[in-house]
Image (cartoon, rainbow over all chains, first blue to last red; front, side):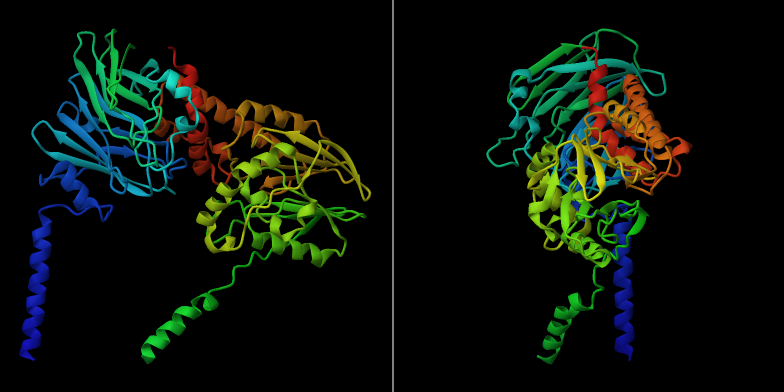
Length: 256
Length: 307
């Protein structure tokens, strides 16, 4: 009898100690099995908080898993951001992009991505004082987006138009600033399709009239083919330039 | 050992215990010799087995004309026995009205020598059929068991066809899927626009050649003096309500995408726009609007880039 009670107590104590140990790091609201693993990769052992003011906007279903629109909006932390790291927990290539806003950037970025199956999408925002704020959304998908050959693979159009940019300057949705939206021709091959090596844009920079980087991005292959990206800025100046480089060393640059 | 046996027996019996998958189709006589089988205005699901499409048949003196075969072999078989419960006449013609899976994957239940479609539709089914079928297995699961693509053997030429006392006019359009058949039965005044017209169920756009094209073909359908219209999805109507809803929604969608692109909006921002309350009675409006943004917005975006 006594043994039974003491065993129960030990068990309860163990449970308590276990939950206490985990209370230091918040549990994943999306309960993804990959959270601890991907978190370790992208933010290491750092403390973090889940922050619903970081908006991760995704459609209710990924109609085309090779072209899933997402918007990351971290304007609630404006002026304090060092970088934003965006990834998909259950993609074979988890990392999607890093975004580094300069002083004149308004931290809102939209683009299209590939997903392999339903997955949590994370936007980990590191502030200048070293805090991590994690925005998140669950994306439902049928899948296959990362292992489908790019459309360009069946059509040689891209070969003669690689890096060709179409762009336009708009007002932002709050009419307070400038939005640059552009499309660039690039196959963005993931390397996960048989006999098609990875070939993708790695670096994107929006340079101001003085040549300074106002927005800098590092892309990974899950960014969709022929990327369409929009950047928001708190800036009315003219003379912006877009600069990009892919993993084949090709550089592309043009005035916006 | 006994427990193991018991477990094995239990495992093996699960499929037997599970409720049988049955469509329980019923046909409504909507005009002389004309029967309408109305599907649900839902999306494909494990619950509805993909019974979201309207099918129909006409019992002419020469034999039966079947208009679409449904989403699966099981649906096709259910449709076949429903026809047999109503008439003994031979099935003379089975038509697949366009390339989408809910309109031709029931073909196995019918004699392949009498299955027909527009020529371009036949090419589309040959090219995309297997991918459509695979997707349907994912969407509705076991309802699809045994379903395989049967490509139509015969070609329907647009124009008049006399059959068993019915004057059937086949019209070739493109707005919904690139190759869309419409049937007007001059004898009964029934217009079958098939998926050129969705009513009270949001239209789908994965293969439309363009919203303006679709809209202008809806104008063309207004010229037909029909008495009853049986849309491809949604309830039958006796007036222009379904055409009005189509024109209205197509115009709104086109204008919304155009003005959004002009404003530089991103896809997720467009998806978050409110849908006007006048479409409040249309099933699946939000989901289909989001899908349409994915299908169509890239072209609107490219059109406004200035260099």
